[in-house]
Image 1 (tube, rainbow, N blue to C red):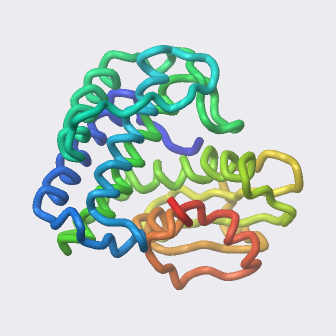
Image 2: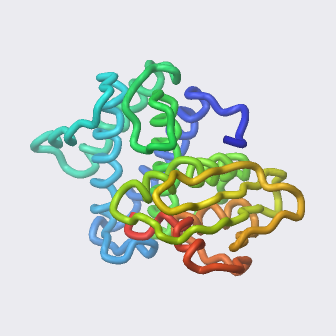
Length: 248
């Protein structure tokens, strides 16, 4: 991880900030309206997705499970917004109560089995869904560059490995340099068949088989397939591995 200064408390604060913006956006939208960034999704789908994600992910923090668990059943008799509000309240309480160093199962072979991985994932999932919701009401706000750097780092050090460990294994060995233009951080990711990606800071002037550059916010949302990015060169197969947001 190249990021510093991030803690469970700081990710929890991001979650609270972002989910408030999400809630405001969806409250002002038609539940049946299409989500521009998620073809085939409606606002109601987006609300239910985030509520379900929070219920499922915070279950690991609240139980301390050291093994993968089946998703808990959603509560019966609630509207989508009531379901969301219930899960937001519970998530805020759980995130604040669980220390980042608590042992718990996590979702990526490249991540430690510690609670802060979930604090981070919940924060960035909420950023992503806030962005989706704000595109519906055409009120997208800027995302802080420091938060985007942490999100880029999460994708490259955690999410790519989870993707490759699942249904989309790679047979495309190669390297990529991800170098935002407005922050000092940079990454070199090395891909090899049947191995977890290796990540380190990219040296000044270093290049890979593929290069990704642009402002940190653009790079962050490009990785999640939410924004177009013109400053990409090199092996398209490697770039496809980095872009984790397809279908998410």
